[in-house]
Length: 193
Image 1 (tube, rainbow, N blue to C red):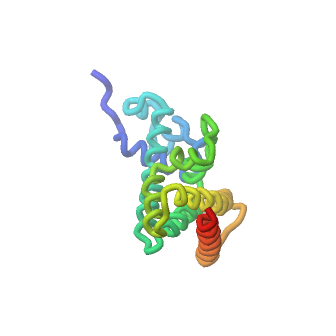
Image 2: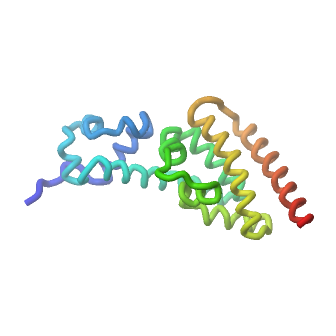
Image 3: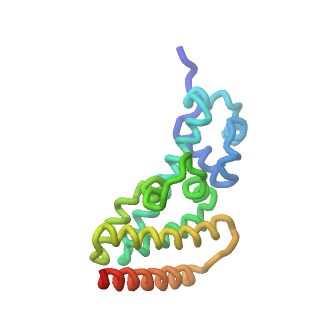
């Protein structure tokens, strides 16, 4: 008969997520996890087969946190801007989780059209919000989304690495200015095609 688990899967994931939140994914070791749980590392492995499995559970939990932010952004009257703002706020408020999800090296280098669907499970919802909000065809919405993601990711990365900080007013103004400029430029190009 296998040993009875001292901790639940949820307790271990919650604790592991708190370690990553505080110190980053490299700090998540079986020893550190056991120490925070007030135990040896052994009870962890009555629930999980390996630390890799724990790390995958932490990534799923971090994605859930981010997905909640996307849902908040999509409820904004300007849904696409709301999502971009939530992306940046996630980087500011959860820098280690942001780094884990959006600043980790990819196994293969995707091209620009492939990166967003790979790193963001909410891609289709966000693209749909762009199309509907601004009455754009799929390709035009995709171009706008890609350009704005690059800009938004830049701001978020600066915040997540504490290279720079911005007020909510500055974020709002920068996002509005770049969005309006890009949308105008894209619509002008479409007129000439």
